[in-house]
Length: 170
Image 1 (spheres, rainbow, N blue to C red):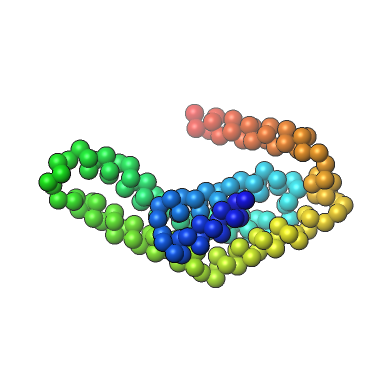
Image 2: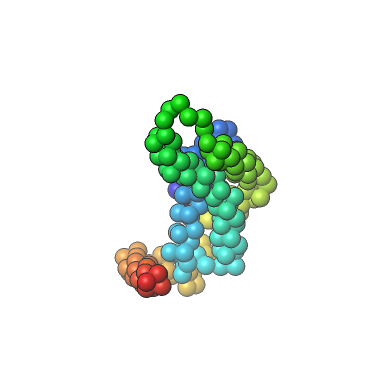
């Protein structure tokens, strides 16, 4: 589902870049990275870290566009409403729109590039025939076992990570 979200939104981005498309594409990449982390005991092999790194690259190409969109629709939009309608657009607003155009071009170039195509193909191939899909071995045993035990352990790991993260912030 995450791969479908990535591929579908990348196709939309190549056609008509817009804020929601970029957001959904980033969300798909984050969902897939999260799934890989959650299922690491089953799917971890020599290619997984490379796939995660490429998903991080993709997110990095999309981040500037998303950040500008959030700022434009949030703080700047509220400030604009507070001003009188007769005022000219601010220099900051104009510069942000120029920055947004460049960030959208960067995001679109990423979605149109060979690196992105190779990433999708690599993920799809890995999902379908990766070593973790084989019968037997530790990964096969975990993969074929009832999900309840694995899910309980995965949730416990996530809670421990969340608690540790909260302690670090305090």
